[in-house]
Amino acid sequence: MTSSRVTLALLGLAMLSCGSKGSAPVPDTTTKTTPADKVYTFESTPYWADEFNSGAKPDTSKWGYDIGGDGWGNHELEYYTNASNADISNGNLNINLRKEKFGNNNYTSARLFSKGTTGNFTYGRFEVRAKLPAGKGTWPAIWMLPTDYVYGGWPKSGEIDIMEHVGYDPTNIHITVHTDAYNHTIGTQKSAEMKVPTALTDFHVYRVDWTPTAITGYIDDTLVFTFKNEGTGSAAWPFDKRFHLMLNLAYGGDWGGAQGVDDSVLPATMQVDYVRVYRVNNL
Image (cartoon, rainbow, N blue to C red; front, top):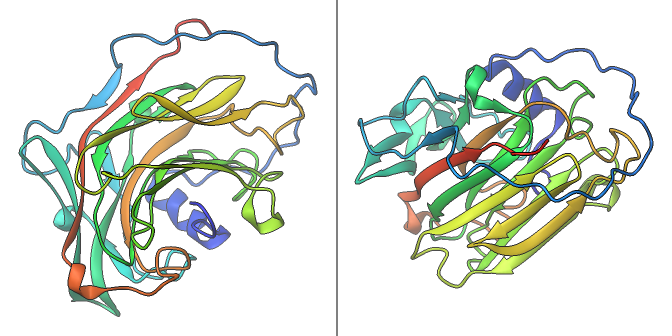
């Protein structure tokens, strides 16, 4: 995630928990030509979605859980459980962060990933309507990770952050991509942010449109972020392989806890009204 959210150690865990062992990096044989400009359109009906309108727990045919409490390479404080910290009520998915002892951790939360053959995507429109938690130390995110890590470990195979937020900066929403050529470890990260004064009190729609030529990010249909395919190969554009969705609520960590944590805000919840994925019409 933004800043030091994902390290090689984290991605090793993520690949195992998502049911993919990854594969050995392959040489970059991408043709080094800038893609031609093209206007892409998207289907009007989602082909993969969860409206969270039924059941008491997330649909296990659509969602799996990353589990553990080793800091996730980022010094986070929570232990991610399975469905114990995720439930459905009033048409919303609730990801619940609690102050409670679990092993060596003093907090629990949940980190969900889209699973199965239908939960891995190459290109599309990804739309999530969500309301974010309040409080210093909270670190909610809606993001995407590579399924197969064809180009190697993070950041070589890429990462897409559809929405990222830290509680000590309550009105700022961040949209980011990470690649081998563009990431914070070498000072080249590609990111944008937008002030959303009601992010903690109202639902907002966070969206990314991913096509062969660009990744664009929107908040409530306002364009916030554009990252174009330069045509220089996978170091800059690893976004031609499968990715899956991630929903999680972290606590503390290198970014979320940069100004400390405030246990008085707990329990805290990120609510998700829906997740919808639309195909590109004209690939």
